[in-house]
Length: 199
Ligand SMILES: Cc1cc2nc3c(=O)[nH]c(=O)nc-3n(C[C@H](O)[C@H](O)[C@H](O)COP(=O)(O)O)c2cc1C
Image 1 (tube, protein in one colour):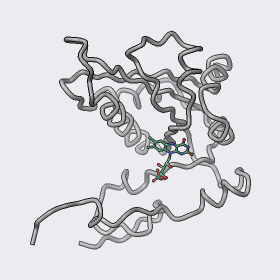
Image 2 (cartoon, protein in one colour; image 1 turned 45 degrees about the vertical axis):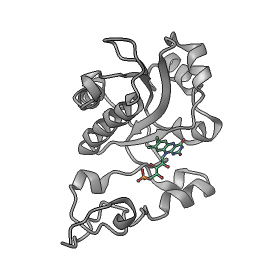
Image 3 (tube, protein in one colour; image 1 turned 135 degrees about the vertical axis):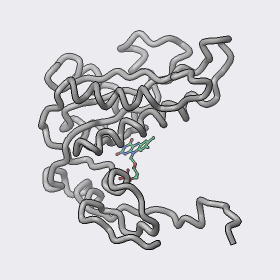
Image 4 (cartoon, rainbow, N blue to C red; image 1 turned 90 degrees about the vertical axis):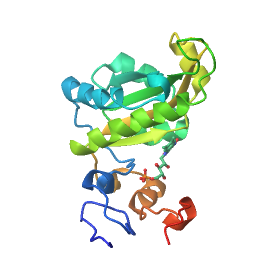
């Protein structure tokens, strides 16, 4: 079952064959400023839209800004922490992912709202991969700043941001980030993450 690695991947030890889009995906910090057309951007969010969710609640919401819209882009940039602002401003699109933490049907707490937002972003990521676009997610954001800037309901959580763009050479990054960019992409062994009595 061992698989031959494709040249497009930086993954060092894929033990079982997985789809090219999964092999190819990673989280670069060096982005080219090549623009993403609105129609293509909407196609990525269409993929997110069709993600499964608990009770089909679709608790996610996205605030996206293209670099071409200078005001919107600057506004959204303020929601990232300094470290992420250091590299993510190169990307042509920034997105804030929010999730509604209560169910629409009864206003009870929805414990899977964060899970569902993550899954929607995952769908978007693989659609992006199909178009040679890369997504880099960020937990390093300032949720209070997001609440200050945007009109966000109390039961909606600004959870993560992500940058979307075409990949650029690592040389555009400063030395510390260049090293991270070129490091092999590693994972825990499958035996650490899977309990399976398969003989
Ligand atoms: C929810 C989440 C939050 C993350 N937060 C950050 C972040 O704030 N800054 C950053 O540079 N990378 C961030 N990352 C990227 C991870 O470090 C990266 O996905 C991980 O090292 C695995 O690398 P890969 O995506 O290239 O396979 C985040 C990823 C996820 C999924």
